[in-house]
Amino acid sequence: MDITTIIDYLLFLPGFYLLIKGADILVEGATSLARRLNVSDLVIGLTIVSIGTSAPELAVNINSSIKGQSDLAISNILGSNIANILLILGICAIIKNIFVKENTIWKEIPFSLLGSIVILIQANDVFFGANNSNYLSRNDGLVILAFFIIFIYYVFSIAKKDNIFEDEIPKKQLSLFMSFLYLILGLILLPLGSEWVVNGAVQIAKLFHLSEAFIGLTIVAVGTSLPELAASSVATYKGNTQIAIGNVVGSNIFNIFFILGISSCIKPLHFTMENNIDALITVIVSFILFSFLFIGKRHELERNQGIMFVVLYIIYIIFRAYIGLQNNSI
Image (cartoon, helix red, strand yellow):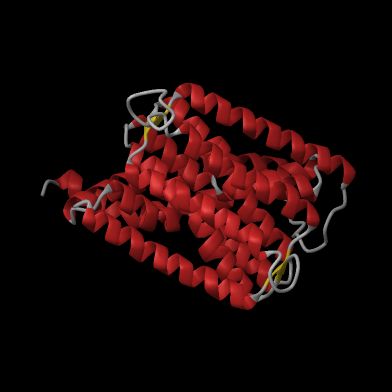
């Protein structure tokens, strides 16, 4: 074992710390700057907070795409979206029932579901007779980014209708200098942390004969979802369940339409059969979330449903481990 490999192992966990800390600093700086520009809490929540908590996924995916590690890039996003719904929303619902507004039910959650379906269709060129292999091309990436622009337009259109500042969101403001300093520090820590996480994940995969896809779906996906888990859990505990559901749904939309779009524009992402299974599960999980809002208390995620979400996540991880063993991937 050479010195470079040892360093990669040692920097793996510190890399997660830099990712999470970098995202936290970036969000705080951006939020403070936005408040100084009198941007509404609604816009901050659906853009800066969602984008900031998804920043670790973005950093990891850009790094993975540049290095040609498609499995890690794809499984990181799909794994994060599955973890966001089943694990994070599940834990939040266990803490406190989550009431979901009409707008989120009929527009934002379906838009997130649409994103999962679009990826599943675009990545299956062989099935539709468009190519000899399955991958997200640069053209696919541009189409996905177009959807993201539509989402941003939607966010600002509802912001015009609802420009109310919510008391539950902290009003801490940094000075203009500190706001920019936090932004710069966040932008430095995120790529550095992503480099350490990606290198460590690849080395762990090699050491234990694990597939990059499985590492991405478990360790990396959950690790990069920690900002969402922290933000949503704390918000739920404090009674602001709208931030919890908004953060998760917004992050899932950002993950699919922006991060995968950018990643495939950098370098086409090859889709394996395992990736397709995870893409299909992402669609199913998104549909389950939508359906649960009409079972039991209407428009509400209840504690027993949260427990079901967490149990489903454990079953999913066991299932993916089994599939990996069957394919001699792990």
